[in-house]
Length: 565
Image (cartoon, rainbow, N blue to C red):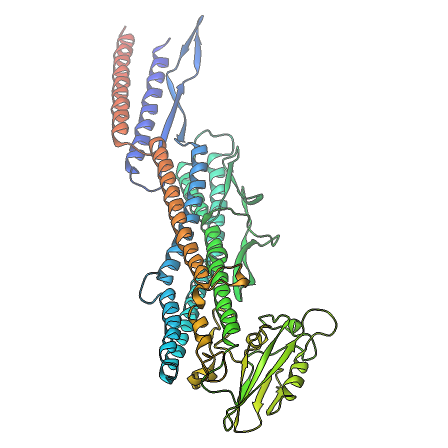
């Protein structure tokens, strides 16, 4: 071994130590930098050379500078991030919905229900009082207003969630373009498969971009041999080396509202994501909020139709002189269960009571509603003909295909009783509530204008309060149309579905946060910078550098001795 080869070996050592110290300084400088992955120097023995019959080494060399990273752990962490953001989006929606319902407060829907049915019970104590009957109307209007408010606010939340989904397409496109650009820069910097070193700063940026993308949608990442990554969402690739596919927003309609979905531009296929903020928001909009609206609509429809069916068989303190149906039909000559009514009548009948104020006599007429599907079923024209056959009454089909009934004498008033067909409630004649959904529920303006029309009696106009007795206990009355469930049960199911769903989702979100924190702890232990550990390494390489420098000094003395001989 010559002095020159020894000096070369010492120089290799000094260079390796210098690079190692620079990497350590880089780690220490970025100890608190978000997303920074600890760098590590890969040292290998330098190539050997032959000296006579011997093979001697030339010391050490730096083979590469790499990131200390576990790609499998990173993939699991991205999946945990997607699960967390999805759960948190749903958790946030449930909490908003709980606050909106405001159960157990003084203004919640259950309070309004109890106040309304309690006001009906007051009619039993003062049957002749118009002010008490007016209180029923006012409480009914308050109840209907609360249902409409609840439905409207839920729709507002859905609209806000939908807006967030719409904006998300731009964020996804921006991140995909960033990853595509970084793929190119990393490949160029690392030189394909030639270099074993990592383009560490660029790779840090790409990892952060991938994690941000994982917050939005669920992705799968595969690193290629040239240093680039291929990003998949479901079975579709989003980024491949230097190419990125764009996404766009598509519009559809759901529950009467325009909703957004994100799809690939080139294939028009929706993103196949099972987690991430996008999935969580879509689920919150369509399942949590949309499902709640479906239940609220069902609750409102049950209240409207079932209450009106019972109410329509009663009479008020005074009778009608002129009444027009709230609902219209699609065809006047088709069976009444096939004319587009929101509530379907059934086979049965109802009675029309014509009361003479002068004589005090009441004439009762049965009107058959034949809807058994055998022979000719009853049409709206048949009902008009049957009503016109009653002495003292006239009926007609309005231009909008509704039904109008009026008395032909100022001495005559009319009412209705014993409706087993549900036709009166379906048409909106002698009803209390109007509308067909939670957004459209209201109180019949004719009753609101004249509370004496409140149908509290069943024995005739102004005769008794038997109908009010049944109406007052309607809240807890088993309903055949709901398999024996009462309106109170439907409301409890509506509220408990939200509270239970919220509790479950809070537990899921908390579990997702804990799991993500665990994985981040594992990543920090592997890829994070420890100042103490770096300090120990710094001292080690410093001592090694000093030893190599001293070795060179000794070689220099030997070289001087050799020259002086």
